[in-house]
Image (cartoon, rainbow, N blue to C red):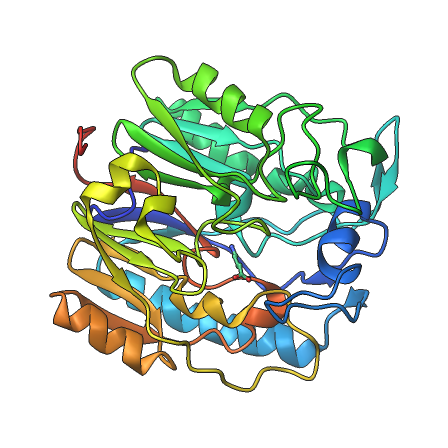
Length: 349
Ligand code: DAV
């Protein structure tokens, strides 16, 4: 039975994505706008690449992921994997698109307690990505999980704003739209990043479906307006947050409840060479870590200053690599979905 209430309790079962089907879509208006049409201070891709990734990237990513899975197995964590996606273009009544790839289950599925929610993501190319998890979702439902799918967004051209709307965002507010990776869980309190991949209506929908038992707190786009939350804030254990020093400039900018926790700032990230292709994530992907227990983190092995900081805070580190993480847009938090963690639903604030 699936059950996961927060970002830190001991992991018992986890889905790990795959790099085998990586493909860069060319027809996705939202994705093109996010990654190609404005030069980004974060150093993310403004030099588009379309189509199949070089075989070397796929192979090396598979090697890195296999190593990670081996380590999870040694810890007696059950690992589940996505199925191959249909290798086909697709359409809705409104548009046609080519596909993305099931490397980051974190973006498309959200686990809150015994619920597993298919989120209404902003990118057309990812519209049917949960197909790779269909059999798993059915199995989890059989075991007692509550399986939901958010209202499918239409993702018309008008949802995207190249010039940025009044809130400074490239995503309008016509319908609920968000990626699951815009969300962090801490028991009854859920934190939701307002950004180009998560709008206000998405937050409202999530709050309405979770019900009055839960509080969904917005994280202001003043902190970070581009994509997901998980290279900006990590909830390491009750009372301890790792924050991105370039984005979290003052503690007052955090939601009130988080201000009561101790915040440690990540040191600058160690940059390392990646493939000749431009990355679609910033150097801060180095802090996209995965807590396997309140005292155990999986961290990019290049990030030695960060590893030291975590160790000083009594967190042991399993250092591993994803050589093409920045190119493919996902670190260890992105490429996983912790469906089962020990521990129960608690109030931390
Ligand atoms: O900093 O480029 C990466 C987030 C991936 N989930 C960044 C955001």
